Amino acid sequence: MGLFNKIKDIFTRDSQDASDEFDADREVNGLNRDRVDMHDSLQREAYIKACLEQMSEASGELDILGGEYNLVTSYLTDMEEIEALSPEYREQLKEYAKKLLELEGNKEKLEEKKGIMREDDFAHMERIEQFMPEGYEKLKEAEEYQVAVKKDLGRLDGERHAYYFRRNELINSQKNMKGITLICVSSMIALVLILACISMLLQLDVTIGYAIAVVIAAVALTLVYVRFHESQRELVRVEKSINKLVLLQNTVKIRYVNNTNLLEYLYVKYDVNSSVQLKKLWDKYVEELKRREEEKQMQMDMDENQAALIRLLRRCRIQDPGVWLHQVQALIDSKEMVEIRHELILRRQKLRKQMEYNANVAQEAQGEVKDIVGQYPEYAEKILDLVSDYEKALA
Image (cartoon, rainbow, N blue to C red; front, side, top):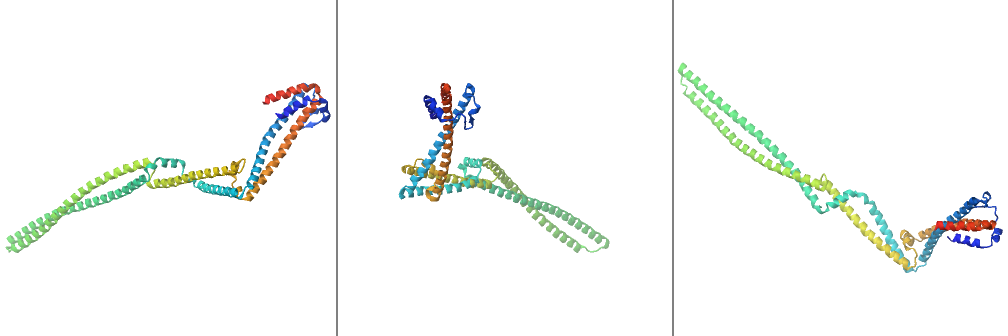
């Protein structure tokens, strides 16, 4: 607390000289001594402490502003150093700056692709990466086989129903043959009886009639017999075909059930609903993986170029080289450098104005305490004690 030490020095001087420099009746930074009874210890102590508070606050602000002022000044000095570099160093700085700008642009493009895949989907695909892309091919084959098996089952079921229909036709046909046979036999018997009656009653020769009846009956029964046995043989073939179809259908059903179970297992294993969904996730994962690898490599390149730029700036006696990592455009574009310099000059002017204000505040508060010591020397020791106590409290 340099300002407090100055006050102590003031207390050791001639108090009468101090009284000649200041007017007792004045207002200092909002503190009006006219309203304070200096002979009242409480009022005097409160007033002195208020002055010390102003000095302390102004001193603290000066420390902060001074540090910022020195920093801005160092930036301006660095800019002068950079502009004074040899063409060789300037060219090297431009090369590093251009490379960093290029990397920044590429990084922004990669950032635009960052939302192509959710993080939980990426983590899921990362867990099953060891099974891909063979897992996708296996799932796709199982789905295609499932479709083929369904078609086979449908085709076999259609064929089976067709054979059932044909078997019913053959059975009905055999029943019809039996009916025809019964009709032929009945008709032949009836015809023979009629011919016998005619022969007995009319005394006619009906031999030819018998022959015709027998021939007709023989031909009809022969045809019926042939057709019946043909249908019987076909019925046997149909039954055998039905049995084969049933066996084949059972085999295909077993394959269908096994493939269905495999599909359900693969869906659970890969946590998807179809091979199409798995393919989309895998394609996004591959793209995201590539993006992250590029981003990682790009970050490594940026770190390498930034480190090289900082090393070069340090060789050029730049005090704070890290600042230029965030304004590399100025190393390439002179207009950008001029704008930054202009901004820094404005900042330094504003800082200087604030520093002058706080310095005046501290000086006036210091002068006020000094004037009080001069006006009231009988309280100088007590004021000194207040200053010491205040310093201890701040320490």
